[in-house]
Picture 1 (cartoon, rainbow, N blue to C red):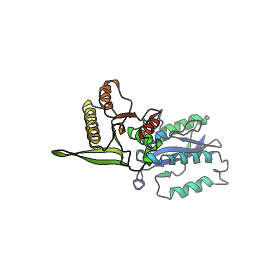
Picture 2: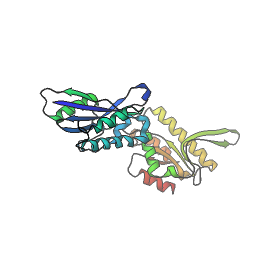
Picture 3: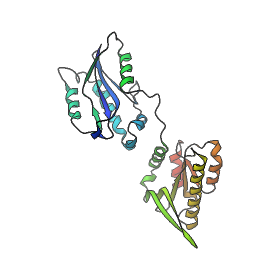
Picture 4: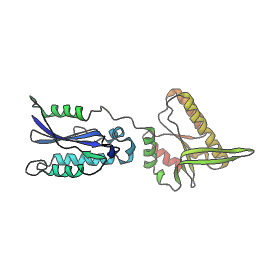
Length: 270
């Protein structure tokens, strides 16, 4: 069996000519097939896998979905890849000439002696040229936070800012300075700290102390109301519940990995 294929590759820095293969378009036994990272056999595309392929492009992962959908459409277009109508070659030659982060390789041909099962052959190609992932990587804490802020629509509130340094005057002492990773500076103001509750106890304790002191000073100064002091968390291990109990005396804890995180945040912000 003879197979002709092209690889799609993501290059973080196009000038380095180095990249990561993420999709395969193959022609064998008179049919065109698509294999790609995050693509199920029913054609469903799970873009969560692209956190590994393009970690710096979190907000742009939809582009991979567009490419993969286009490839699937191309594969079902019977006359798109034939000697009589070399449309695929023309399209990909044009793309290859452009300096893009997503590039397409020149066509390659392999002969698979004794192979008659196309799916087995494609599985082998996919494993060798792309690699397979049994499940997508866990979503980073920062992505959960951004998703919650977006779906709750707090990012669209007037005065929403990131990494804001705030100074609180103290009688007879130097001003207390803290940084809120997220804050809404317009009334009703809201201040946010982030603690994942995973890692060394010393680091967790430092983050808890910082949040407690920051919220205490913010409430005392009138900058924040107690009910609008928010700590973004993940699921808290039992061993760290004591820290959560400390925080709950002064702040609202919102587990951004829970299904009702956005709804709860909207209620707090109302």
